[in-house]
Image (cartoon, rainbow, N blue to C red; front, side):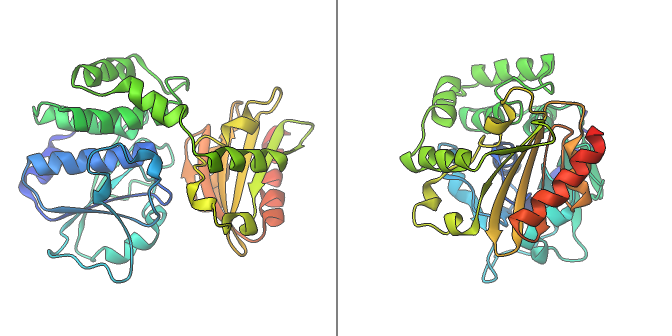
Length: 322
């Protein structure tokens, strides 16, 4: 339920910075654009900035180019008074965008992660929401503003990504109800499904093959691990590789309960994606290393080599399996 305090502050204030977690996914990208759409309707000034580049996979979203990657040279023509954080459990996950935040800023926190630290001056948290864009749908609805095709596609993209195409247990009757209204508003659900899940670059398919070739298992076949090393991530074709959903391939193996996807993004710095289809809560594991997420999908970063990250993660998973 959207609070009156949230509506009041968005209506009364101006000059917003919108951001989300590092390596934004479809839910955070759709959510940021949907919040921007609402602010446009309310005639507010805003800027959308992320620490990491956004995947070209989502370039079909209108206004995709409004999302700016952080740089030390970034200049704004207004003073930021409000920060709206979408789909992030804590401020640390904003990465370098934190450098833009003045001390006297008001923070609005919109999220559905169970690991959320309630860091906002206003916290709009719904742990039952299938996606963060479900919460933003409720926010837009509370203003009585009619949806158009663009915002319908922002919200639908977040839902279809974060529910795994309505496959995950976070899919509810409300999720389907909202999706029906988005279809009525003009969301191209067939196009989005075709583009996101059945259209790939040749580099993406080759990248998937390379990744699966690294596959190994542990804990009597209950844990599957795949990785990209630093050398591969610096290859000339890497920019055309879209890794969205890669972690689900090792998770699909029979008897595997937890999947680990490691990317050596810098020397001695590893990005970790964790997935679970058992009672093991990977959010608890990610939190140990400063990350977060959901019980069945979480992420973090670990300082060290891929070998170091494997060892640390398998220790924590092993404790819970035992």
